[in-house]
Image (cartoon, rainbow, N blue to C red; front, side, top):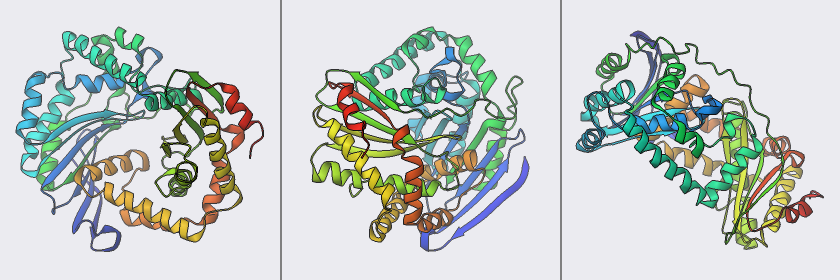
Length: 445
């Protein structure tokens, strides 16, 4: 186990006052796996996550959904434990064990009381290293994932976001559904899973993040014993993706479906996750559609009653980003919703936010972040993402200071760069025709 390469002590008041004392450190295991730790002695719990810098964008054309399916199969039995025993063991610890897949990461995590760390590390390592991928279990779990795919088809909000991603990132793996498609899922075999593991998983792509109450030396000894000897022969060592970033495309695309509401996504360019002005982008997003006081919520819902749901969101990847506005309204009202959104965007182009509005937005943004990071699970997530995408821990004080520095001019200038009408994408799902949107967008506001 290599020595400590980074350490920090965060004590006291102001932005760090949600913890009395926290200690953040970074180590390397014997095989090069990065371990990022934050000790929070005021807690009685610990969250441990094994993050692989591999996701949907790393799948080949005939592997759609394989990253997500692999995550499912890790819970279906190991050399030492059946699927039932895995469930019973985590319940007996009084904790939670789960996993999730994104376009760029796959994560297996556990949350337990601090006295259960030994058992938790052992269970995580068993699932990560020794999953059996039994053929019968594979066939059963295929049906579970197929039902998951069908559930998306029955949820208009999820479906329109999926259709929108395919439209704006067409042809690129980042535009694919994380779940894959039914045809590919039906063809997956055990050899496909093992080949994917051999090609994609390696210590160079792995980060173990731990936050909560633990003894650092004891924990590192356990992690090194459980994960430090893993050194697969066939895996790529450097962890560098070879794909080029996708182009973000505009245009109007309408999917006819008999629904009570019309669901619309408006898409613009965003920023990569580690971009130098990412905090300006987060402020812009919060101001535009990030809460009940946001411009879009107030103008579209509160003042005009055109939609029940409207919000904006940022999707940031390692090399590209999107800003998406979503609204659900009646078919007759949906073109008017698009019209109002465009007018609000134009206002931002012409004039930045007023001082009170900007201050309120920044306070909301900081408050949301603080609340997400109060517990061990939130801190574990931040530790891993900082390491994977920033290459370092970003202190909370630095994050809050960067938000405080955002000016009205910064927001206005970035809105002009990102929220460009000539590259805007509109995706609609419902009983509405394309001409209704084209008429509104022929002459931009």
